[in-house]
Image (cartoon, rainbow, N blue to C red; front, side):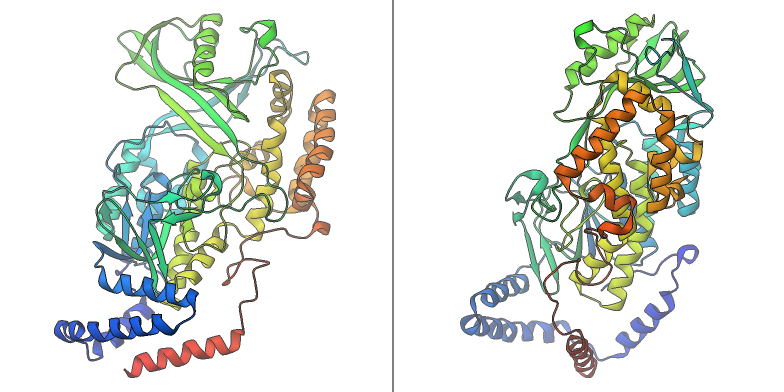
Length: 578
């Protein structure tokens, strides 16, 4: 494993051990280039002979080894991270800077701007800044609003113009500054930028795919086919999004029946307006779930809400980012419908759009939510959307993707430190750091939440969110983010805390919504087994989660651990003596 020296400010405890190992290795007699070339025919002869007498599965493996020996990859590294969005970029940087690993970041569009607006709660962004002080995340904020507004009026005896004000600051991330910061830090840490497409083809439905071409695994690592040549890595990380062609997912036949993903869809645009009507120019608009602008026959259609960020003055007008969003639906609400409702709503509340800003393209948002997690037995390590990190009930993903990265990067680095070249061990450690027993149970609870929200019309959702935001701020904040290290998560990370959350929410809901919830608990349990109950009480087991050892739960027997450890020790001794 070719590790780079971590920076002094972020050096891990293991750094001194790594230097000792490097010094020991450099003191050994090394083969010259001519000696290595002379050995190659012998290696190929032995490999070919073995392939003739080995059983069929082992012959296939010998062929893979022979191909790896004959084809020189364009890039070699410890870890290849595929996908240069926020999740992949931060993980690649952490692996190099804190983990001291040789990392390649692969994406044909890694220098293209990130298209989406990222809205974050200010206190969550501060939590992330404390986790990764090297990034100076406070400088990656473009806009800030001290207050956040919602509109849930028009039903349950609430006046249609009633405003719910949340005393919690909201920010718009400067996505170009964040991207540039991660690129610069990655270059300084030695991350290699590979501008190329990955050449793979799936062997099944994209959300439950098995890669059949483009990736070759062998005992020492993996070879990834790209448009710029092969990339040889010990570990491959897939950060290409939920509908990846690199990651295999747990199918519905593994364990409890898993609901298929729902979809968050949004149409957004920046516009110049004369007046914001009922909306406060000094506040972030998180939700406007009112439906008085729709015809009677549309009131029960899948609901959408308005989300708006006032961006200040321009040419005597107000510049605003508006986005009409379907929180989660299956099938998805179309972009065209979101666009239609956005302009219909603005006209109804008295917001005159003078001009749609041409210097910013419209935001076309499509986010799969929920669905199965990655298969923990695979060699490829999924991360970000590919690892189902998107919150199944809220769609929040940026802060979760950044918050999970330090633990996953540390797990991979430590695994390769303990057992260099053992790609399977590194993958198991990474999945264990990501989807542990604690985070898996918390996700099961959130999955139920997303499925329930999909059953509610706009009237019921107004009642639901009215009760939800009546809870203490730390409690509702923790559910919205739902990841260790982010604000309020301590109210949701244990079974008891989740049960208390649910029971405290019930008296704040309209009775009709409470009855819908009770009926859906029974329906969901019949369809999907004890997943919900398992997330709340300990009497139904722990379900499927990824342990941080060498195999996921319920995997086939892994052999005799004592003898295997002895074999590894003896092999290491033989290598040291060679």
